[in-house]
Length: 573
Ligand SMILES: Nc1nc2c(ncn2[C@@H]2O[C@H](COP(=O)(O)OP(=O)(O)OP(=O)(O)O)[C@@H](O)[C@H]2O)c(=O)[nH]1
Image (cartoon, rainbow, N blue to C red; front, top):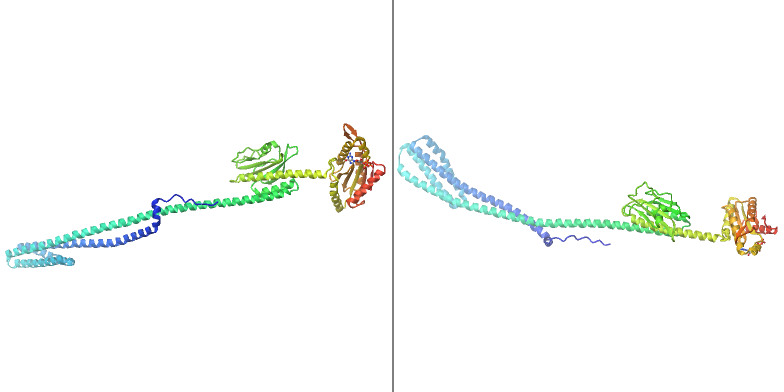
């Protein structure tokens, strides 16, 4: 299954359109920010220079104002001294003179950059110096003559003072104009710088904001795609693991089915199934029940794993929903908890998966397979399918084994007498003989023949003869031990093999058989027929031979001898 990542919601139009301009936009934003930085450095330097010029104008104006005030003060002090001759006035005058001289000097120096103003400042300085000289002379005259040239001096003085004042005002006006211009220039530059900085910052901020938004969205989409890819990878891994698990289960089931075909008997079939279930369902446990022929009780035939809930060793079919209904009965958190009576009633079924599957083949109920496990995520359905498949295979195998056993027994038994047939004798006599030979034990073969059976047949009919043979077979079967082999050798002739029985014991047993069969009658067509005597020939290993053929021949010869001696007797070889 190919995985196609979800492309996510489309980007908004603006961001989509901006995508090709991402790197140019970043370069533009960086360039603008750099330009803003450079502009700010340059603009601040320019502002500083402008402020310096504004400050310069203020200083020029201040020097003009200071010079004018100092000149007026000196004038006033000089005039006061001239009128009063007070030494304090003279001292004031002398104190103010340095300032009167300093301001024009400063002004000349400050207006170095402006030739016109500088020229005015120089003229103003000259006027101030001239006026100071006049004032000093006036003060000196006052000390000598008191009122000399006062009227003349007053006119000259006023005229000079007016010129100085006019010049100072002219300079102030010019400087104020310059001040206004410089402030306007500084303001304009500050405004331009502010606008440039605002625009130069805002544009990169907007660009970077858009880029950042796009980047965040793309990051979000990338993270989402990554999450989806991881989740798809996990699903893929889980599905691959599931596929591997299923294919391994199929492989195990295939091997199981193949081996089950070759199972010799039901016990082997159960043991194969136990092994397979323990491989397929290592977490589960359970057991197999087999129904008695009476079908009223089922016994535990085999167990596997560890049961999550205990089940009874023996149960009646009506204690199990599966046996009652003839179909699987499952309980778990999804399918409900209707509990079978053979399960431990004290244990709650919550969190436990149980499954009872009837073993049915060709419409015949053979038993039941019960499984239980603690529930795990998403495994119960698959486990149920597995158990049902195994139960089906096992049912068929058990039915086949039963059929095979029936056929085998039929092929080894004589249908008329129920005894083993001659083929069975030939297959087993040699084996028993070798076993006894290995262990140094004797073995006896008896040949039995019904006396004058032909006349019985002739007298009562062939069917009556069959009935008598059948009855003799049952009697003989009841007289031998489990390890003995009683078979119909052919016609009215029987053979009994007595492993580990010596000649003495065999003679006794033969006598008992002769006596018992010799008194056996049969009811046929409401008439009691018989009894008929029998003659027995006995041969014992090792004295009479050490091969089946030799022993059978010796026994047959002894039988012939018994017949010859008058029948109804036992003759040992
Ligand atoms: N009813 C019946 N008769 C059988 C069966 N097999 C063999 N016989 C008969 O058994 C008789 C055997 O007779 P014989 O072998 O002549 O010997 P006998 O009459 O038993 O006499 P002795 O063996 O000498 O005592 C024959 O008549 C067969 O037909 C059988 O399966 N059923």
